[in-house]
Image 1 (cartoon, helix red, strand yellow):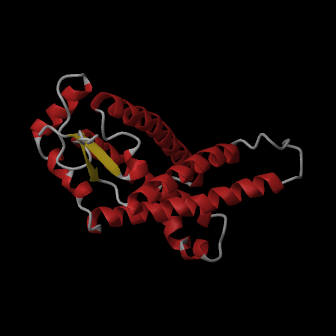
Image 2 (cartoon, rainbow, N blue to C red; image 1 turned 180 degrees about the vertical axis):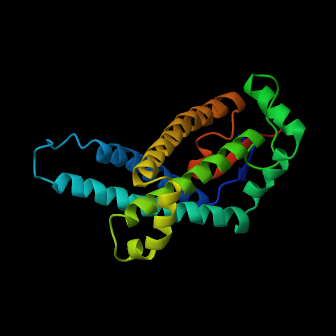
Amino acid sequence: MEHIATHNRKLIFTPAIRIFHWLRALAILVLVITGFYISWPFLVAPESSDVLVQGWIRFAHIVFGFLLTSITLVRFYLYFFSRNNIERKSFKDVLSFNSWIVQLKSYIWMGNLHKAGVYGPLQFMTYVAISFVALIVCITGLVLYANVYHLGVGGLLGGVSDWLTALCGGLANLRTFHHYLTWAFIIFVVIHVYMAVWSGIRFKHNSVDSIVSGYDYHKDHK
């Protein structure tokens, strides 16, 4: 019996993008958990002198903080210089008023979603915003690191960190700013996961499996 393909398969996410996506997701998860614990170390009584748990939590936070910083910088580089330009194509929709209308209408079940690249204009601007939030989180995190560790990378960042600390009105304000930006990540992740699942159900493609396999499937209308 002959099988007739009903959908076309297209590679939209390269292996590098997929790997960095999941590494970034892991880093954000670990950083959120360890960050909240550092601000409220509930596993050890306040009067205890046992700092081993807090030390390991801080160690994990620092390691994954540097991981997120590295991934954030690499993702900025890949957007501009990757041989796969499907992400850069998405910028065309940002400049198109009609593309904004099409995407917003599709979200209220009016018509289908058509994109020049892999992201619609609203998606693209949201990802740009969260990328800059990640960059600011990484910068404030490095400043906090430099104020505790004065050798190695911390020593190299000493002068810059002092300037940024003063700009924020002190280390306490900078730490609070760092903490508030964490909530931007949490809110984004909740909405991002919901919309990725909803998009797969609504449009039958461009869903969660795309960032796993790298491929998107479109119905063949021929």
